[in-house]
Length: 375
Ligand code: MG
Image (cartoon, rainbow, N blue to C red):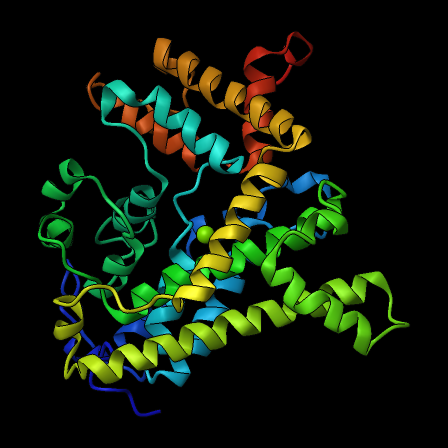
């Protein structure tokens, strides 16, 4: 497939921290994608919460299936825009690698615990996973990914963190943009979770169809689907509607990026980096999308049954952190540090790497009298 001039070309990569030979049939970005799929952190995504805890039901999204949906959406747009599909896929598959157990509740709790020690941010942790925590290579820590993949993984970043990230942090300090592949993976993330959270919300019964009638996107598609297929089951109406909303968002995004590209006529990826971000919905779609996001926030993420889970998650994460900080000898040996200043970050790494069920098991082992026999 021919790549556009403004795409990320693998032969022009800014390279890896540890130089490697480039022989073999795969491009640099294909290698990155493959390294991510083979990583330990990637396999853990299967047992990490997106919104619903893994054991709540077999059909809800997990971080793994979410990441696969993001990759699928991002790649299909990348192909139309003649962007680099392999890079887009690599970024999409890696974007949530640093997520804690129990979704955003886990991240917020860990961030609170880490306030005095530099904070915790899942996006920065995704970069830390691929840069430092994975142990796949004998010669170096991390996966030694290309600059472009790491640039895409780091979606946002505080000024303080950007300053210590060197070249990778520069764009946050001087207001520049990442590649189009990175911008695309970012918006695809949003398309994926907004739509699958509606689906999971209905499936769980925390959302119902009459609530959705207030949403413009839903109103544009659901009645039409019912008219076209009056005898289909409710589940099929829902699936067909969500499918159509995703399609509408993809079509809108593709067209609005194409228009922006026609105006700018960028001749290289560096021109993209020096321009404001281009991958955006049209204004009408952006408004509808914001309405959907707000709806999910007030009706699903704040649903009392979701809140009960997040409340428990907060307790598990904070109590584990406090116990380990008070007595680092409770930690598995490889997470203990003789330097006291390094210890909190190592505890955060340990907790962030846990799957939901691993965290629950650790909690029981440490705090439950019934588990005196287990270590
Ligand atoms: Mg995500």
